[in-house]
Image 1 (cartoon, rainbow, N blue to C red):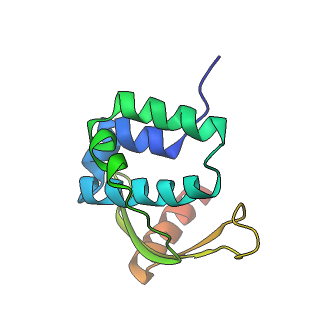
Image 2: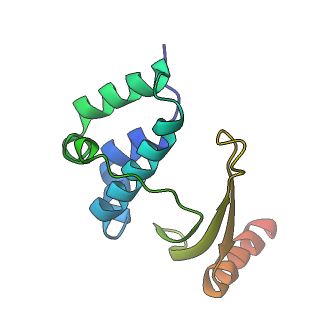
Length: 129
């Protein structure tokens, strides 16, 4: 059976992704803390437990961070990413999560002015091909 794409798995194992993210370790710690916050809503979920076991096996950082029980719930955040075609990109995002439905999360990303201009330029170039 082929594994489905999982952002945590990719973050913890993809060397190229690690090299493209500034302060990768600090960001990975935050993502692990957010994962723990999500896990708190479903402590008996078999799939969560399977993922935790897998991440413990494949990632030294996860093995170090998970036992600390750090929990972070995020609503607003600043994200930087690097793409070799576009360069450094910056986004602000907000996560909307109704308190009555912890299963539902909506993330809205807004590109910085510079990032939006470069993305628009890239899309215009592709349209004219």
